[in-house]
Length: 346
Image (cartoon, rainbow, N blue to C red; front, side):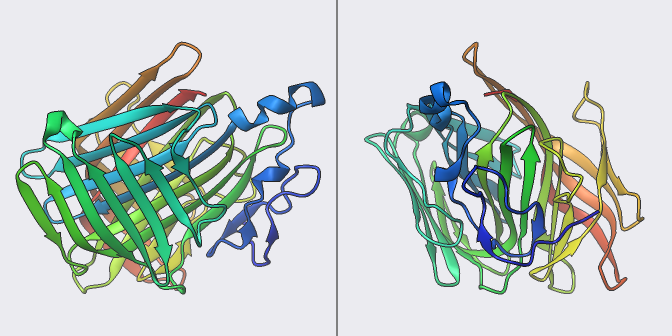
C-alpha cells in the first residue's frame, strides 16, 4: 500500500501523534515539533535531546561530488563538508561537533527560512528563496588551511516534485523527510588551488531534509542519484528502507524531469561484508531493475561510547531500467550516485 497524502495540516496533533502517514509530492504538513510528546512527565525536560534535524545538500558536477550538512541532533550539532574528485578518486571530509548545537539555526519547514551555522572556524548558510536554494560555505581552515568555499544556487521551481514521507517509528516516534532530486546548480566551488565554475546544464544537486524522533538504535539504507539522460531530461533515483514502519508508504521513486514516479517497495541486495561488490535494486512490480557498481567508499565513524554512528557510503554508477507511471521504459547507463548503509545509536 502506498498512501499518498494530498491534504495539508499539522504534522502532529495536540497529543504528539502523527496526523497523517504516507508520502506526498510536495511538503504539505507543518512541522510543528513543539508538539513532540513521547516521554512521561518526569522525563519531559530531556525530550529536546531526542529530536533530530538536518539539512544535507549535495551536487554532482562534471569533475566532483560536493556536499555540505548542518545537523542538530539535540545534544550536539554536527557540521560536515566533503568532496570527491572523480578523476583522482580523492575523497576528503572534515567535520565539527558542536555541544548543544551552539551557533546553529534551522527553520521550521523545508519551504522557507535560513539554515545557519556561524562560528570562528566556519560559516555555512542554506537559504530558501523564490525558485532557488542558495548554499554558501566559507571554511578557511579546511584541510589544514587549504580551505574550501562554495557559492551555489540550486534551482527549484515551485512545481518541481519531491519525495516527502511521514512514517512512524515505534510508539510516538516518527520520521518526516523531504528529498529533492535533480535541481540544476550554478555557481562556484573553490577547493585547494582549483576553482570550478558550475553550469546548470551539467551540474545537478539534491537536498535531504530530515526532522523527527528516531529510536536509540537505528539502521537504514539510502540510495540516491541525480543526472541527465542523453535526450536532455533530468533523471533521479531515491530509494530507502530500514528506518521505520513503511507499511503505509516507502520513499522509493524515480524523478523524471521534476515529476515523481512512485515505486512500491524496492529490495536492496548487497554484500554486508564487502560493500565494494555490485548492489542490486529490484521491486515486485517489475518497474525497477538496477545494478549499482561502486568505485569509492566514504566511511564515516563516530564513537562516543553512548553515541555511535557508522556510515558506509559507496559512490558508483547505476545502470538498468526503470518504468514510469505511464509505462515508458527509461534506460539508465552509468548514472553516478551513491548508496549507503548507516547504523547508529543516538
